[in-house]
Image 1 (cartoon, rainbow, N blue to C red):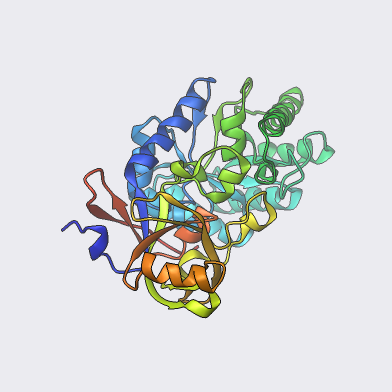
Image 2 (cartoon, rainbow, N blue to C red; image 1 turned 60 degrees about the vertical axis):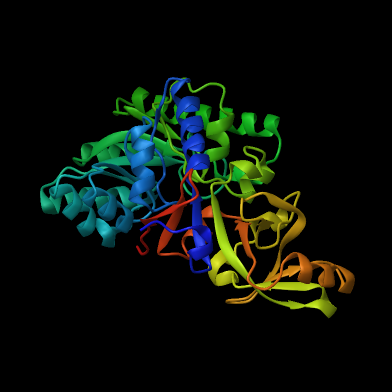
Length: 379
């Protein structure tokens, strides 16, 4: 039975279906218009209903960040899966189990040791694993440099050792630290060119490299040229968040996720309004603290998800959120403006982190009613 927003227990994670649908269409059009496939990263929503909508819009395959995601999505019919985190040798048994059940699961390595572990597991199990080499295109996190000698050595170990070397992949995660269109376009070009360069080197060494996979939400939306790229991966675009607002790739009105909360008290002398969404609902992610606008633990909106100017969740305890209104006079005005029982919505700093706090979403449909969409946890 669908519920209205007034009937939902708080705090609750809401998904505005209309906004999400627009976000999905925007990314799909952006990537397709530049001649590449979109392989969405499902780690943000971890929700079958969302992934099905991405698939229906034209996405091909999915990207996951945990084997639990791979298992859950494969059980729901998603068979083409890229596990985009460097494989740990102890997880090869779960990879093998999925592949033997029919999942076309691809794993990622960025070292000789990891490549050898994949080869050894393949020989021991008489199985050909699909693998890609992760490329470091911006010094953000993992990967082998595109011009490093190890790139060819890793490819050789995989190919000659019996694995299926599918190609190269990269993620320019430092894009989250940018906030101008020019800087984002430059990083998108760098991400593309360095991954394509790595692919060329493998091919020149007579090693197979069919796939060139790149992407982050900011670079995917900023790329003007995807020459040499076969697929793009992005995840947070499906919901967006306040970090992405500060980066400059969306507006607050594009953010499809919010947390429904209820006013539970006031501290007039401190200028505070208290809500029932603390860090257990919003997460402790303060990603906007280092950006041009600090939204605290989230931006405050009315029940129609219109941002309320000047208000954010400035403080958070486990189950209490604090809206600092700025003084006694403002606090007194807030008692009248937002009496106890008032429903508000809070836009998150980081959709992935906030979503992870909830076992399910309430999808808000065009008529204002909701449907429950399950979400899963774990590794």
